Length: 139
Image (cartoon, rainbow, N blue to C red; front, side, top):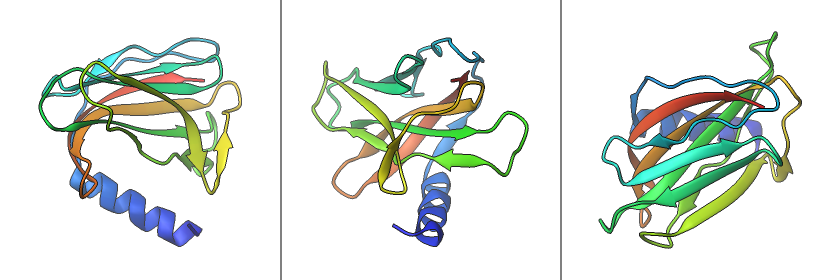
């Protein structure tokens, strides 16, 4: 997907998600905190070793657990990466682990980059994302 398409997809994703802010922070070399979606259907956390996002489906509710994430340079707000959403459609009790997929490639973040991630639930059939909770970590 080209850059304009990714920006349009990001805007649509942001518009479809209701965000509840209240996360915590971590920095380079640290794992981020586990965050639950507002409906308790998903939990998501960031692991700095390998820059992986873990998405766990907590409820048998017919909804998928979704992890959204992005990274930003610590001193230049114009340098950022918007990772593709990670959908866990395996059902309750299953976890999906993912690296950031952006612009057709899997990415690792340079040390010190700010990583924001969101724990959400969504409808896998039409890829709509419902409510989300945000947390901050740094890679």
